[in-house]
Image (cartoon, rainbow, N blue to C red; front, side, top):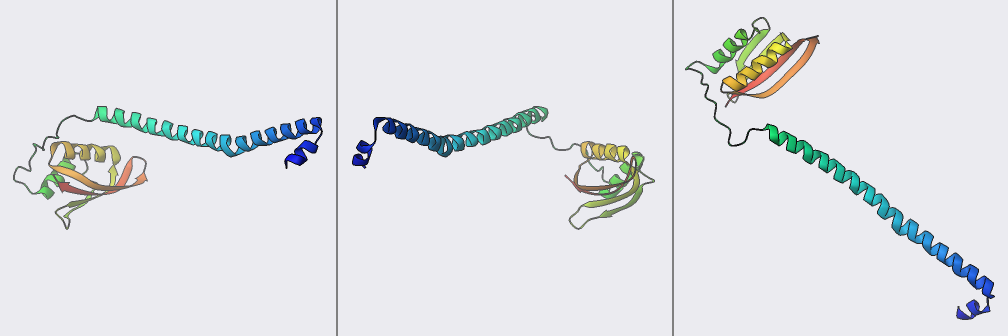
Length: 158
């Protein structure tokens, strides 16, 4: 290999050395720099997404009350949970939409409403959770016309 190099004219040696340097630069660029640059971009996107998530969680944390949650002070006043749910739904203006209130298998209460006014339904659920010893287990609401829904709710006592 050395004999072959020495057999080249000085001008040819310069040309081969320059070609080798360019080839080395291209290999380093394609094999090292480009993959690192792509990986850096991916990591930058991950950092931005994680920072956005952290900011959102911080804003959410600021809205949450601090300290342990207080137990509900509202009671059923000696009435059955079904009667309390029925009476509160009627008081919220949902009497016409109320189809069924029935006990569930694990002490839950299943409430079925048809063509209920959505704002009244959401207001009633908010009042029920805030002022009564109930929690919402599930809600399924299907829009039947603007502002009205068919809904099935599952409630449980806290």
